[in-house]
Image (cartoon, rainbow, N blue to C red):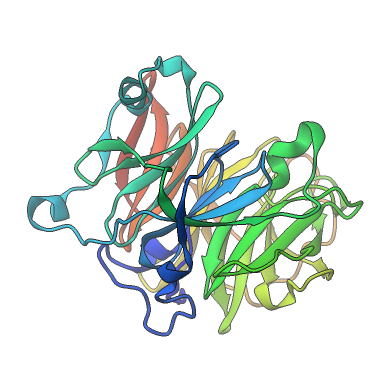
Length: 364
C-alpha cells in the first residue's frame, strides 16, 4: 500500500482535501522558519506542496528553490467542498486576469494543495514568471509574491548555458526533505539532491546512473524528467521517468552527497516520448502509477511486483516495451500535466478541441 506522506505529486492521492499535516512529520509547524520579503522569480517551473500549505517553487534560471507560505490552509465548506476544478479555456482566462493574450501564456506545471483543494500553476506571461491559484469552484487569482513569507535555497553547480532550464526538472517533498531532480555541470550530470527543510545549505547531490533499454546503454547525462515518491517494503523510494521512456526505482536513502547511485530500471515504456507528469495511487487494493506523456498518451502502470522485478539490463529494440505492465487510457488525450486531487480523482491540464482545459477525472 502507498505510504501516507506529504509529497508534491503524490500526497493528494492519499489525503482527502482538507486533511491536516501528519502529526509526526519532521517539518510540521515549519512556517515559522519563513521570513517576510519579496520574491523575484527568474522563471517558474516545477511545483510541489509540503506541510501547512507551503508551496515549493523551482526556479531553474536562478537555480533556486523557494518555499512559500500560501496562507491557504482552510478546508473548504458548504458547496465549495463539493466542487472539483473544471475550467474550459484556462489559458484564455489566465490571460484575461493578467492582461495578456492567450498565445502569450505558458503553463509549466501544476500542483494541488491537499489542504484546500486549490490548484496552483507555474505560469509565464511572455518572459514574466508568476504563480496562479485556481480554487475548487473555479476562481482564478495571482499568488502574491511581494511581502510574502518565504525561504530560498540555491543549487550549487547547476547546469548552465542552453540547458539551464534543466537545472531543476522536478520536485517532491518527503518527510522533512525536498527531493530535487536536474542537471549539473559535472561529467556525471544527472543529479538528485536531498535538501532538508527548513532549508540548509544545498549539497552537491547524488549522481544518477541508469540502464536505458531503448538506447541500449548506461546513461549518466539524461535528467530525471518527473518522479513520484513511493514506498517499497517500508522504504522510501522514488519512481523516476526519463525521456524515451525508462521507469526507474531509486531508494531515497541512497541519495547521499557525492554518491554514485545506480537506479534499477523496472520498465521500458516506449521511445520517442517524454514523460510530463506522474502520480502514484491505490485502487482496489493495488498500487498504480499514472503518467502523462508527450507522445504515448496517459499510461496506467501496474506496480505489482515492483519490489522483486528483475532489472532491465539488456537493449529493448524497435521502440518496444519491457518490465512492468501498463495500459494506455484511451479516453484521456492531450494531457499535459496532472496531479492527484484526492484519493479517488486527479486534476488534469489537457488540450481538447482546440482549448487548454483544467478538469477533474476519476482515477482509472
